[in-house]
Amino acid sequence: MRLQGKSAIITGAGMGMGREAAILFAAEGANVGVFDIDEKAGQETVALVKEAGGEGLFVQGDVSKEQDVKRAIDACVAEFDALNVLYANAGVLWKDRDKSVIDTTEENWDLVQAINLKGPFFLTKHGIPALQQAGGGSIVLVGSISGLVGFTLAQDSYTCAKGALIALCKSLAVQFGPDNIRCNIIHPGMVDTPLQAPYLSEQAKKEIGASLPLGRIGLPRDIANAALFLASDESAFVTGAELIVDGGFIAT
Image (cartoon, rainbow, N blue to C red; front, side, top):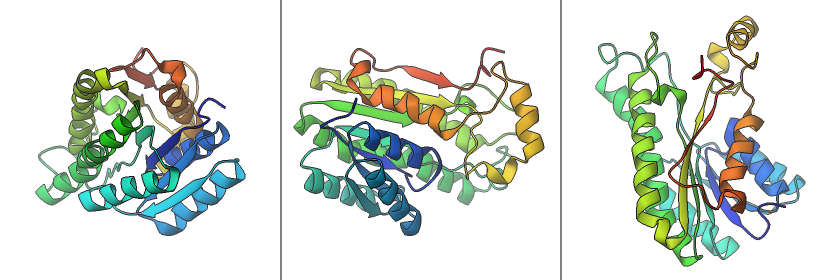
């Protein structure tokens, strides 16, 4: 029960890593606000949160829309009386539209930035006052190994957004540490999620896994476990940190 008595909001919690974190947080005692653009998926996650023993609230909305994010924060505070954890999980990786700078349209560049960078901006803008009111809390951002290294098959808008989140993480950690608010960022490697499914055949999973020191690609629970640590009081002296969860990719 590492999150007993705490309330969290998780963006993009309708599937994949966000859903897994919602279930795990609930099993560890948290109330969970499930924010997603997909109502059906979000409601399914809330049902799973309740099965895990937690209280769940679904709020439908688009993380790239400021008023949607503010409405979600307000709804969670009203439902749970307080908010202790902001988990900026929502993101998109569109390899068919987000490519090298010379091949990406301005429209697609802006859309990726709006979801992957403005979404966390809106979540922290409107969520930090709730954490301050609660006497502190934890912010967990989701970066990527793409923000740390270059790839031949580029997704440059995605890469830039994830790199910018590193700077935001450190700035928030310094600004709000005196308020007992911590901010950390997770850098997942290749993870088997619905978002990645179009690009991950079974053969590709085997080949990518074989190239990693741990011999497999990641699972949503691997990232959720890292988020649980950062959300909980076990990481009370950790802020401004980057936690790489990539099966050893960066080490090779």
